[in-house]
Length: 350
Image (cartoon, rainbow, N blue to C red):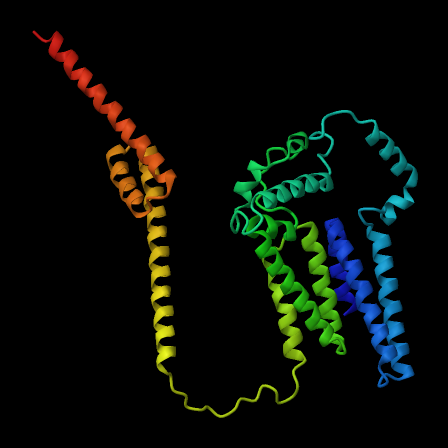
């Protein structure tokens, strides 16, 4: 266990992720703090068991400090740099005197860039405070409210599809409704962990969950992190169920009354309508992509037919009508050119 934990911690240190290391430190403190508190209030734990917890804590703490001292952190040098202290000072002095723009000397600070993107996310939320701009639309909406100081950093031409803050990202794309829903889920989950806090594994799950909340504040939830966000509470619930709580009663035959049949029918019709509308929207997008490709390939007649069908399927999509207008204008220019050419030949012919 110590070996695997050491490997994971070394990997974290080599990433130089400040948010990850901060989240680890907070999770580390929470885990051992709750472990000591529970061992103090739990009468079942004997003096020997409490000493064992203290011994484990000292072993893990010394191992963590030794690894951090050897590998180094974003704020502290590693062991080799400390040994070659004179060389380190010389290198730092040479780096200070290096001239040149931000792109040539390493780029702008990620903290500086994050603050700018966060400012833009807040502006998006101010303009769309209730429901936001829509799920996964930050890449489109950010450039409408992008702060002017973003043009002065090294990543001025980068595409930002996330706010690099999960909470601000929810606020910008799903509005106050989405943000409050997300925060309600987090608070409910934390209360769930507190409910099962008397179990040691729940302490570990709570600490890991808090580390996810910290990293999400400085970044965004990728697929593995999002999976753990929901998996940790599920593990806590499943492991802390009382024996026999999952026993199912014998199946009872139940009848469906008329009101339930009506509700089921309405739900079925609504589901069919949503599926049909989604399929219609998808096929319209498919035809648009094909028509655009035909337009780019100068197959204008085919493109006009395909884009006309796409515009009929989704008449409210202005981009479809724009592409169709472009194709129609091109065909009109070609027809006009052919007419002028025929007229010219008729004039000059004997």
